[in-house]
Length: 188
Image 1: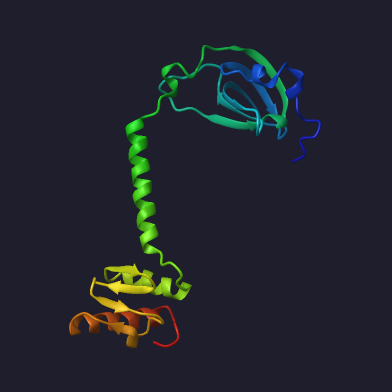
Image 2 (image 1 turned 90 degrees about the vertical axis):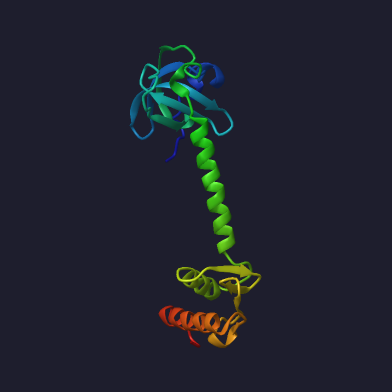
């Protein structure tokens, strides 16, 4: 959308003053959407305003927020000011829950990083992923280490399986052949 001529941003004082936290407005944007909202934040560099919908802060309730490019506001009517909505209990964050989510995301990212081979082909990664569904595997440079004892080297064919006991070696070869057949890879 072309916001040219659509903005009322310069009609009401300075941006920082107009979009002070706690100001309540009736807002209409270039798309035609209209809402009432309390200014929760304003960032002048990208020119975005964050509104909590409604005319009163709602402590303890879920809230609808809107992030609006101020250049896309076509009508802005000042309705008043509320006490600083950020100082009331309506903007609480459960830090323990947030830290738990962060720790989980870090563990997942680390697990994903271990699962991805560095400098290997897409075919090699597909073989690794398929083997990992049946056997414990890990990357060791470009080799796939299976059950911490059997090594599968590039080009990841049955005759590229080395180490481990005869039983483990034969098991890995059999699974590798099935994986290559299922993935329809040449050279099973």
